[in-house]
Image 1 (cartoon, rainbow, N blue to C red):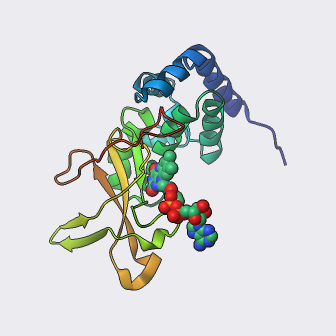
Image 2 (cartoon, protein in one colour):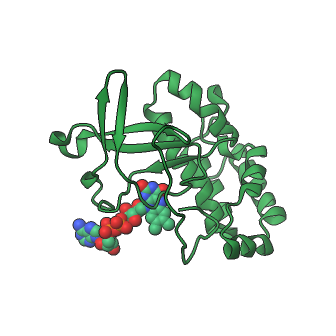
Length: 209
Ligand SMILES: Cc1cc2nc3c(=O)[nH]c(=O)nc-3n(C[C@H](O)[C@H](O)[C@H](O)COP(=O)(O)OP(=O)(O)OC[C@H]3O[C@@H](n4cnc5c(N)ncnc54)[C@H](O)[C@@H]3O)c2cc1C
Protein backbone atom coordinates (compact mmCIF):
# COMPACT_ATOMS: atom_id res chain seq x y z
CA UNK A 1 0.00 0.00 0.00
CA UNK A 2 1.28 3.44 -0.93
CA UNK A 3 1.07 5.84 2.00
CA UNK A 4 2.60 8.77 0.13
CA UNK A 5 0.70 11.68 -1.38
CA UNK A 6 -0.21 11.43 -5.07
CA UNK A 7 1.20 14.01 -7.50
CA UNK A 8 -2.15 15.83 -7.47
CA UNK A 9 -2.28 15.88 -3.66
CA UNK A 10 1.29 17.24 -3.55
CA UNK A 11 0.20 20.01 -5.92
CA UNK A 12 -2.74 20.85 -3.62
CA UNK A 13 -0.38 21.06 -0.63
CA UNK A 14 2.10 23.25 -2.54
CA UNK A 15 -0.63 25.55 -3.83
CA UNK A 16 -2.18 25.99 -0.37
CA UNK A 17 1.25 26.57 1.20
CA UNK A 18 2.03 29.22 -1.39
CA UNK A 19 -1.26 31.02 -0.70
CA UNK A 20 -0.58 30.83 3.04
CA UNK A 21 2.96 32.17 2.63
CA UNK A 22 1.99 35.03 0.34
CA UNK A 23 -1.53 35.98 1.44
CA UNK A 24 -2.23 34.66 4.94
CA UNK A 25 0.74 36.35 6.56
CA UNK A 26 1.01 36.87 10.35
CA UNK A 27 -0.10 40.52 9.80
CA UNK A 28 -3.22 39.40 7.93
CA UNK A 29 -4.00 36.77 10.56
CA UNK A 30 -3.70 39.25 13.45
CA UNK A 31 -5.84 41.80 11.60
CA UNK A 32 -8.70 39.29 11.23
CA UNK A 33 -8.21 38.11 14.79
CA UNK A 34 -8.43 41.64 16.17
CA UNK A 35 -11.27 42.92 13.99
CA UNK A 36 -13.31 39.66 13.81
CA UNK A 37 -14.05 40.67 10.23
CA UNK A 38 -15.09 37.75 8.00
CA UNK A 39 -12.10 36.94 5.72
CA UNK A 40 -13.88 37.38 2.36
CA UNK A 41 -10.63 38.55 0.76
CA UNK A 42 -8.96 35.21 1.58
CA UNK A 43 -12.08 33.22 0.69
CA UNK A 44 -11.91 34.80 -2.79
CA UNK A 45 -8.24 33.82 -3.16
CA UNK A 46 -8.99 30.22 -2.12
CA UNK A 47 -11.98 30.17 -4.48
CA UNK A 48 -9.95 31.50 -7.43
CA UNK A 49 -7.36 28.79 -6.76
CA UNK A 50 -10.11 26.13 -7.00
CA UNK A 51 -9.59 24.92 -3.45
CA UNK A 52 -13.30 24.87 -2.53
CA UNK A 53 -13.81 22.16 -5.14
CA UNK A 54 -11.08 19.70 -4.15
CA UNK A 55 -13.55 17.17 -2.67
CA UNK A 56 -16.43 17.74 -5.12
CA UNK A 57 -16.87 15.49 -8.21
CA UNK A 58 -15.79 16.95 -11.54
CA UNK A 59 -19.33 16.68 -12.95
CA UNK A 60 -20.41 19.33 -10.41
CA UNK A 61 -17.47 21.62 -11.09
CA UNK A 62 -15.03 20.21 -8.54
CA UNK A 63 -11.59 18.63 -8.76
CA UNK A 64 -12.86 15.12 -8.08
CA UNK A 65 -11.00 14.37 -4.84
CA UNK A 66 -12.47 13.48 -1.47
CA UNK A 67 -12.15 13.97 2.29
CA UNK A 68 -8.38 13.47 2.12
CA UNK A 69 -7.90 16.42 -0.26
CA UNK A 70 -10.25 18.52 1.89
CA UNK A 71 -8.22 17.59 4.98
CA UNK A 72 -4.85 18.49 3.50
CA UNK A 73 -6.08 21.96 2.50
CA UNK A 74 -7.62 22.43 5.97
CA UNK A 75 -4.36 21.29 7.60
CA UNK A 76 -2.26 23.74 5.60
CA UNK A 77 -4.64 26.65 6.29
CA UNK A 78 -4.69 25.74 9.99
CA UNK A 79 -0.93 26.17 10.20
CA UNK A 80 -1.51 29.86 9.54
CA UNK A 81 -4.96 30.59 10.97
CA UNK A 82 -7.50 28.31 12.64
CA UNK A 83 -10.26 30.85 12.01
CA UNK A 84 -9.72 30.96 8.25
CA UNK A 85 -9.32 27.17 8.16
CA UNK A 86 -12.67 26.65 9.88
CA UNK A 87 -14.46 29.01 7.45
CA UNK A 88 -13.16 26.74 4.70
CA UNK A 89 -13.83 23.42 6.48
CA UNK A 90 -17.31 24.38 7.70
CA UNK A 91 -18.49 25.11 4.18
CA UNK A 92 -17.59 21.50 3.39
CA UNK A 93 -19.53 20.40 6.48
CA UNK A 94 -22.62 22.08 5.04
CA UNK A 95 -21.92 20.76 1.54
CA UNK A 96 -21.30 17.09 2.35
CA UNK A 97 -24.92 16.17 3.17
CA UNK A 98 -25.92 17.48 -0.29
CA UNK A 99 -23.06 15.59 -1.90
CA UNK A 100 -23.88 12.34 -0.09
CA UNK A 101 -27.67 12.39 0.10
CA UNK A 102 -28.98 15.17 -2.15
CA UNK A 103 -31.00 14.27 -5.23
CA UNK A 104 -29.66 15.07 -8.69
CA UNK A 105 -31.62 18.32 -8.92
CA UNK A 106 -30.21 19.53 -5.59
CA UNK A 107 -26.66 18.52 -6.53
CA UNK A 108 -26.86 20.32 -9.88
CA UNK A 109 -28.24 23.44 -8.26
CA UNK A 110 -26.06 23.75 -5.16
CA UNK A 111 -22.73 22.00 -5.79
CA UNK A 112 -21.29 24.08 -8.68
CA UNK A 113 -21.31 27.44 -6.80
CA UNK A 114 -20.04 25.72 -3.64
CA UNK A 115 -17.23 24.06 -5.64
CA UNK A 116 -16.38 27.43 -7.16
CA UNK A 117 -16.41 29.09 -3.73
CA UNK A 118 -18.79 31.78 -4.98
CA UNK A 119 -21.18 30.62 -2.25
CA UNK A 120 -20.36 29.26 1.19
CA UNK A 121 -22.33 26.64 3.10
CA UNK A 122 -22.99 25.94 6.77
CA UNK A 123 -24.21 22.97 8.80
CA UNK A 124 -26.85 23.73 11.42
CA UNK A 125 -27.47 21.03 14.00
CA UNK A 126 -26.71 22.54 17.43
CA UNK A 127 -29.42 24.32 19.42
CA UNK A 128 -29.48 26.14 22.76
CA UNK A 129 -30.61 22.90 24.47
CA UNK A 130 -28.97 20.29 22.26
CA UNK A 131 -25.23 20.04 21.67
CA UNK A 132 -23.58 16.63 22.21
CA UNK A 133 -27.09 15.23 22.63
CA UNK A 134 -27.92 15.86 18.98
CA UNK A 135 -31.06 13.72 19.12
CA UNK A 136 -32.49 16.24 21.59
CA UNK A 137 -33.01 18.98 18.97
CA UNK A 138 -36.32 20.80 19.21
CA UNK A 139 -36.50 22.21 15.66
CA UNK A 140 -39.38 20.63 13.77
CA UNK A 141 -40.32 20.39 10.11
CA UNK A 142 -43.96 19.82 9.21
CA UNK A 143 -45.16 19.09 5.70
CA UNK A 144 -47.86 21.45 4.47
CA UNK A 145 -48.85 20.81 0.87
CA UNK A 146 -45.71 20.87 -1.26
CA UNK A 147 -43.62 22.56 1.42
CA UNK A 148 -42.05 21.84 4.77
CA UNK A 149 -42.45 24.52 7.43
CA UNK A 150 -39.48 24.64 9.80
CA UNK A 151 -39.74 26.02 13.33
CA UNK A 152 -36.84 26.36 15.72
CA UNK A 153 -33.58 28.06 16.70
CA UNK A 154 -30.04 26.98 15.91
CA UNK A 155 -26.97 28.16 17.80
CA UNK A 156 -23.20 28.41 17.22
CA UNK A 157 -23.32 27.76 13.52
CA UNK A 158 -19.98 28.31 11.80
CA UNK A 159 -20.36 30.58 8.74
CA UNK A 160 -23.82 31.53 10.08
CA UNK A 161 -24.98 34.75 8.45
CA UNK A 162 -22.15 34.66 5.88
CA UNK A 163 -23.07 31.43 4.06
CA UNK A 164 -25.75 31.33 1.37
CA UNK A 165 -26.60 27.62 1.72
CA UNK A 166 -27.53 25.91 5.01
CA UNK A 167 -28.00 22.24 5.77
CA UNK A 168 -30.44 22.41 8.67
CA UNK A 169 -31.36 19.38 10.77
CA UNK A 170 -34.96 19.22 12.00
CA UNK A 171 -37.21 16.54 13.51
CA UNK A 172 -39.82 15.18 11.13
CA UNK A 173 -40.89 12.21 13.26
CA UNK A 174 -40.06 12.44 16.95
CA UNK A 175 -41.42 8.94 17.58
CA UNK A 176 -38.41 7.56 15.68
CA UNK A 177 -35.91 9.24 18.05
CA UNK A 178 -32.61 10.20 16.38
CA UNK A 179 -33.78 8.44 13.20
CA UNK A 180 -36.66 10.89 12.98
CA UNK A 181 -34.35 13.77 12.02
CA UNK A 182 -34.16 15.05 8.44
CA UNK A 183 -31.70 17.39 6.72
CA UNK A 184 -33.14 20.36 4.81
CA UNK A 185 -31.41 22.79 2.47
CA UNK A 186 -32.19 26.40 3.33
CA UNK A 187 -31.05 29.48 1.47
CA UNK A 188 -30.22 32.82 2.99
CA UNK A 189 -33.14 35.14 2.28
CA UNK A 190 -35.89 32.51 2.57
CA UNK A 191 -39.00 33.81 4.28
CA UNK A 192 -38.75 33.59 8.07
CA UNK A 193 -35.07 32.55 8.04
CA UNK A 194 -33.26 35.03 10.31
CA UNK A 195 -29.85 35.34 11.91
CA UNK A 196 -29.06 36.24 15.51
CA UNK A 197 -26.07 38.15 16.82
CA UNK A 198 -22.54 37.08 15.95
CA UNK A 199 -20.72 35.53 18.93
CA UNK A 200 -17.61 37.22 20.33
CA UNK A 201 -15.15 34.37 20.69
CA UNK A 202 -11.86 33.92 22.57
CA UNK A 203 -10.22 32.29 19.54
CA UNK A 204 -10.67 31.41 15.84
CA UNK A 205 -12.07 34.94 15.58
CA UNK A 206 -11.78 35.18 11.79
CA UNK A 207 -14.63 32.67 11.66
CA UNK A 208 -18.24 33.70 12.14
CA UNK A 209 -20.24 31.73 14.72
C1 LIG B 1 -16.70 27.77 17.67
C2 LIG B 1 -17.82 26.81 17.53
C3 LIG B 1 -18.32 26.50 16.28
C4 LIG B 1 -19.39 25.62 16.14
N1 LIG B 1 -19.89 25.34 14.89
C5 LIG B 1 -20.98 24.56 14.77
C6 LIG B 1 -21.58 24.33 13.49
O1 LIG B 1 -21.09 24.80 12.45
N2 LIG B 1 -22.72 23.59 13.43
C7 LIG B 1 -23.29 23.04 14.54
O2 LIG B 1 -24.32 22.38 14.41
N3 LIG B 1 -22.73 23.22 15.77
C8 LIG B 1 -21.60 23.96 15.90
N4 LIG B 1 -21.04 24.16 17.15
C9 LIG B 1 -21.63 23.53 18.30
C10 LIG B 1 -20.85 22.31 18.78
O3 LIG B 1 -21.04 21.23 17.89
C11 LIG B 1 -21.35 22.01 20.19
O4 LIG B 1 -20.76 22.98 21.01
C12 LIG B 1 -21.00 20.62 20.63
O5 LIG B 1 -21.86 19.70 19.99
C13 LIG B 1 -21.13 20.45 22.14
O6 LIG B 1 -22.38 20.86 22.56
P1 LIG B 1 -22.56 21.89 23.79
O7 LIG B 1 -21.65 23.05 23.55
O8 LIG B 1 -24.02 22.13 23.97
O9 LIG B 1 -21.97 21.15 25.03
P2 LIG B 1 -22.67 20.00 25.88
O10 LIG B 1 -23.22 18.95 24.98
O11 LIG B 1 -23.60 20.64 26.86
O12 LIG B 1 -21.41 19.43 26.63
C14 LIG B 1 -20.79 20.15 27.71
C15 LIG B 1 -19.73 19.26 28.31
O13 LIG B 1 -20.32 18.04 28.80
C16 LIG B 1 -19.68 16.92 28.21
N5 LIG B 1 -20.70 15.89 27.95
C17 LIG B 1 -21.81 16.03 27.20
N6 LIG B 1 -22.51 14.89 27.19
C18 LIG B 1 -21.82 14.01 27.94
C19 LIG B 1 -22.04 12.64 28.31
N7 LIG B 1 -23.11 11.97 27.91
N8 LIG B 1 -21.11 12.06 29.10
C20 LIG B 1 -20.02 12.74 29.52
N9 LIG B 1 -19.76 14.03 29.21
C21 LIG B 1 -20.65 14.65 28.44
C22 LIG B 1 -19.05 17.42 26.91
O14 LIG B 1 -17.92 16.65 26.53
C23 LIG B 1 -18.64 18.83 27.31
O15 LIG B 1 -17.40 18.85 27.97
C24 LIG B 1 -19.95 25.02 17.30
C25 LIG B 1 -19.44 25.31 18.57
C26 LIG B 1 -18.39 26.18 18.69
C27 LIG B 1 -17.86 26.48 20.07
